Figure 1: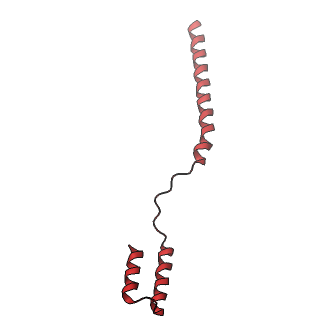
Figure 2: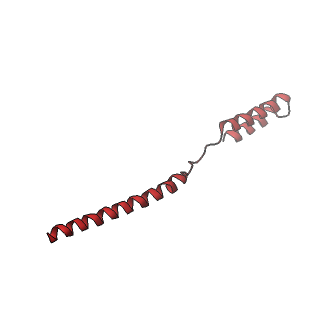
Figure 3: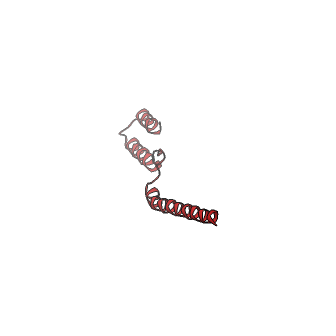
Length: 79
């Protein structure tokens, strides 16, 4: 009988340990979810590039920029 009692006590302790580990994991879960993932390197916004080129085109059409100046500025924006 003594061996069986020891086995029951050991099983009880294992169950307690598992319960404690689960409680610790549950406490950590909200902290891990709250931390946002790092954002990937963002590409330049297309709208911004489009707006810049439209402004250049308006300056070109108004005569404020020559063909060469417009082409150079547009190439600089586009990279």
